[in-house]
Amino acid sequence: MLTVVDEYTRECHLIHVARSIRAADVLNQLFRLIGQQGMPEYIRSDNGSEFIEKSLRHWLSRAEIRTLYIDPGSPWQNGYIESFHSRFREECLEREQLWTLTEARVVLEDWRREYNEERPHKSLGLETPKAFALAKQARLSGRATPSLRARLDNAPIMERYLTYNLVPILT
Image 1 (cartoon, helix red, strand yellow):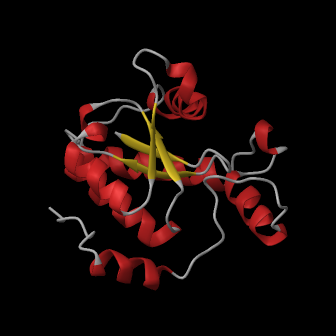
Image 2 (image 1 turned 30 degrees about the horizontal axis):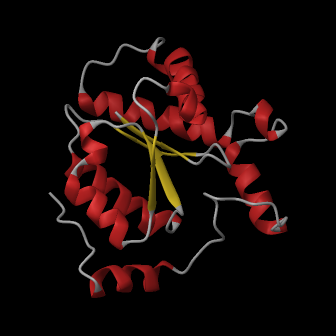
């Protein structure tokens, strides 16, 4: 599973389920998310081979997305995702028996939506991540928000990707 969580809003944007996940899969999913959510300032991840592959790093560099890799064996450097994974395991994976990829995709997507839209979070003042993100965007409080950007018109972003040959090869 590939999970993508916004560090500021705690919103889970993606749980991608596959038998194996390669750098090309990560790139395709990131490209899709950028089209939906806008471009992040940075991406924090571990040093798994799918995240440090040369073409993925090159694409991120050309798209002007910084990478922040945590040190090997240092999960405390990535506390937001570790906390998310703990909740994910406890509230979903340990309660479900998943027999097929299709079943896993449906069950995990349902859980992701519940996590974002129905489940209040203590760290967000008992708001849901989606409500928190919408409220913060509406107020634009001036607080530094490294991974939450105001809604962008994604057409210029996609144009820029096409102009600079940044569109990944979708497989």
